Amino acid sequence: MKQMRSRFRFLTLLLVCGFLLALVLCAGNLLKTAGISLPRLPSAAVSPSPLPAGESAEPAPPAPEGTLSPSSPLTEDPAMETVSPGTDNLTQTEYNLFGL
Amino acid sequence: MNRQKSSGRFRFAGAAALLSGLFFLVPALREGNATLYLLAAAVPCVLVLGCTLLARVFSLDRMITALSLYLCACGMAVLGPDAPEEALAQGMRCCAGLLALVMGGVLARAMVPSLLAASCAGFLGLLALAAPLFSPGLDLPLAEAGLVLVLLSMAAFLNRGSLPALMPAAGALELLLIQRQSALAILWGLVLILIFYAADGRLVIVLPVTAAVMLSLGGVLGFVPGSLPAPDPSSLEALASAGLAGVESLPPELAVSGASLFPPLAGHYGLIFAGLTGLLYLPLALRGAFIASAARTRFHALLAMGVSLMLGLKTLLALLTLFGALPLEDTVLPLLTDSLPSLCAWMFLLGLQCGISGRNEADLAEDAHLAMLEK
Image (cartoon, rainbow over all chains, first blue to last red):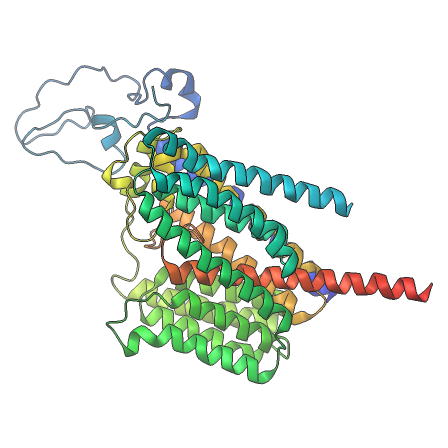
């Protein structure tokens, strides 16, 4: 029974670590989805969906047909919107976590 | 020390009762709905009576009773603002769950881990798991109830030795895999490995069990197409749209769908409250682990630990799936569900832990009495 109890203590520790890890993972995923990055948090409170560095807020000039500019992810084709995972929060609905 | 412990638990029960009353009182004052007023009065009363009178009469663990009743009240609070009649129906389900909790407590104290009891529990559990295979039209979710019975059987068999417990355990895992219930299969596989490690720490037992479970899970989930759904970012996006303090009117993506009440809970009350509610499962699981460590018999210790592992791992898997970290289809947290069989199964499991806790206290009281007699 003593050995079993020490194994129980180990399993309890595993459970606690699992919960902490899940907390970190879930918080990280949530912040990523909301477009908030922790180093830029003070500016994120003002503009919840920060743009990548070097990008302007104005829409990029229309690219020639059939070509996609890799450096301007904000270019939109109204006829065909392709949303790649993880980047749609830059162009579509901004998730306002803080209710502002 | 006992007085300090019990005053702490009473404080939690009081705080839980106050909060659960406010869940319904605030919308009741806003809308003037009679059903909400009724719930605002009834829910705190049931919570306080359950934690005090019921726990005393049936020797249930007060902390587990308070936490589980509070989580049931949270489930009702999700439905209250939009559909008070549905919240009342959920209240009736929670009352049935409370009955299951009491039955679990009584069974834990009365059950003798005989070979007959183990075999019967195992057989009934496997039957419940296999029921959808025999009658495909059966819409009743009996998987969790089946796992409860198989866990009872496993704990009773492990009391005698490791090998007999493999039969119901492996049978349950294969039945879940055949029915493509990947989330429950992963949960049961993890519980199996950890329970066998807890019961018999020898590598000669643990390694083959681990290898067999990993091969079964990997074989079916890895190679059978469609066993694991593609990762779905919509649940995470829906949760992110809830904000920290909730939204006034619930968008369709946060409405009650399936049996999971966690997304609408986040929608109504915000991510902070939902996160704190999710964290309440940790003390629930830890209390069960403490009860397991304090149990006098191997059967009760393994049963209590098995329940803690099932509860903790199910919560973890559901939360990780909801927040997009795992590609599983099951996003239902224990007790935060509107499915009656699932709610009763989880309350029954927690009742087993309450009963084992009551038995521990009875053993302690007997020890104290014997020590006094010797003096």
